[in-house]
Image 1: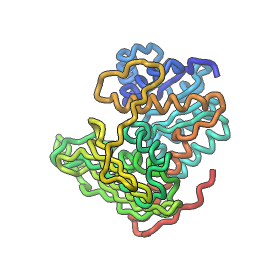
Image 2 (image 1 turned 135 degrees about the horizontal axis):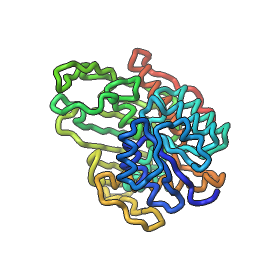
Image 3 (image 1 turned 90 degrees about the vertical axis):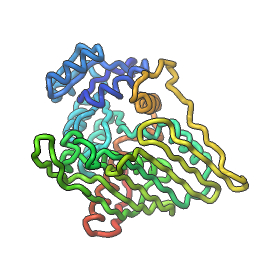
Amino acid sequence: MERPIRVGLIGVGWGSIVQVPAFRMLPEFEVAALCSRRTESVEAAGEKLGIDDRSTDWREFVRRDDLDLISVCTPVDLHADQVISVVEAGKHVLCEKPQALRSDDARRMLDAARAAGVAHAVCFENRYDPARLAIWQAVREGALGTPYFARAHASADYWHPTRGLQSEWMYRLEEGGGYLMGMASHDIDYAMALFGEPSAVCADVRTTLPKRQRPDGSTLEVDADDTAVLLLRMHNGALVTVSCSAVGLGRNHRELELLGSAGSISASGAVMGAEPRVEWMRVGDDASRPLDPSTRMPRSGIELPKRRAAGAIRSLALMLEDWLPAFDGEPVPGVPDLASGWRVQCVIDAARRSAAGEGWVELPPWTD
């Protein structure tokens, strides 16, 4: 495919903060145009980013002949219709996570992309943060041996009663809100990147605070989850727990623990902030040793922007770099695609069914 690959973004929130800077670290991409349903949003983003080509009609936007790749960065409830429209227009597609509201929507998106023969990816770029990239490589090289158990946990205070409200869509399940999708989905994806797919899920997913008070005194009804605990039986025999909570006073913490026949790996640090400390112990060692984070940067050598989102920009840029061969029809193992997003959504759907009273929920065979 000719380079640069011309990119159009639909959605200018996270898209302008992280995606545009990530694309700009790779000379193979050119962010050519922006689209948002709100005129004031797309105008402000265009001015900030120096992009003059701006639109408010996404249906016309995806049919443009001068764009090769469309990145969908809109609210989750819009993803399915927009991604399917993109691929039916013959465009390659990048979709923000979570991929869809439900697994059947995610599957329709995957099937449409495959039928169109386009490149597709979903933004589980946390696979590529320096600590997780190093752990991923160590596991592939046999650091754990036979995996026994893994635990991933994240806690934050975003919905603690002492904190002000976030954007209201985040409190509504049918708009893609909640932290099972917003935070734990990254850990579900990472667990599957490390160990393959689960065969069954048991979970509790809950809304601790079903009502919140707005600044004007009115009540916001909340049905999205703030806390979730998932137990996954993996096809390879390992047991995995994934948990998250957004109601922890003063919390901003993430942990990862991996246990196997040949060794163990643990990591702990902030949800947002400095790189976590990673330790590794192998059979025969007297004590744990540090596992250095990956130092990989995009091969272009373009300097990483100095801002709070720098870590996310770097991770996404590395994912996009690994994705590049897909535009020439080559396989890109390890890059999360719409199949990865569908699998994560299947686990999330099963977790909600389990929490509603079904207990252990068997997952159907993964058919691609």
